[in-house]
Image 1 (cartoon, rainbow, N blue to C red):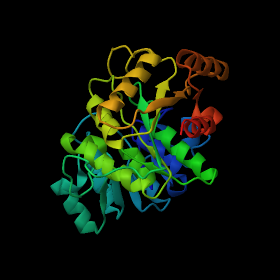
Image 2: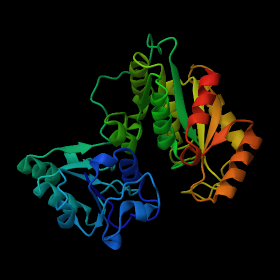
Image 3: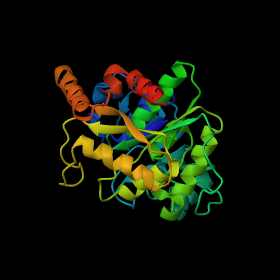
Image 4: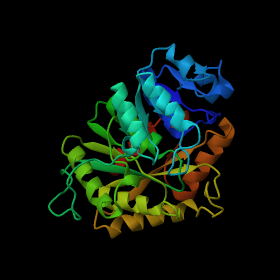
Length: 345
């Protein structure tokens, strides 16, 4: 894969690009961002989990590394293609590359782009395209397999690390020889896992049912199912998706993801409630759907912007405030989170 991160590959990078670099690193050969060409992705992000692959000027430079897939790695908050991106996608198709895209704009439904893909004999994978299956409102007769345990990530805001936390927990469970599955609900998670449910592109009436079907299928084969959460109940723009996931997955346990020190929502000048209140609202909402009385069993704290000592203080403060174990999965690993989940089970 070559990842197009033109104009946005800064120190933190767009989520989709970082997710691919961290969790599908063997498949990535280059990143496109003309502002930082000549450097490596690891240098640019400062993340040791990111491989030292080249950052290049443009698609022509990336083609020297032999990609077969062009990944749209930017995530603009709009439903249309940003200026210049359409031309870059057309160029990728003309270069005989498959195209992977996680934007709200469905490339496969775009007449110009789908025609270009047909001419080139290449495929377009729209990560946000909902699964094509029969869905009816309601989950009667469908339950999780007894003995299985479903864990959902919830958040105090968007972009707090819900996907990362669930992927890391799934990997930790696998390291311990446990039977586990990661269920993706967003474009980055779907790229990492290879499948999933793009929750924000499912008709709202059908989201709980569709998620219930997918989680039941996962629990039929695995003892631990880690579901990627989306947004936050306290975020007025995206809370509908959060609630649909909470009801549809019927989790047995919750892990709360929070950015250390965050006081306001990243997109809006609205305060984030105190952590105990965020815990309480998610636990209360979980019971509205008739599911089990799911409890928040641990806090996944994002401390990447803090020094080691500041991070340690923030983790201790979160534990003191909530009475729950807290950890940054990148600094300390996800083992304490999994221990808390297994203890609660």
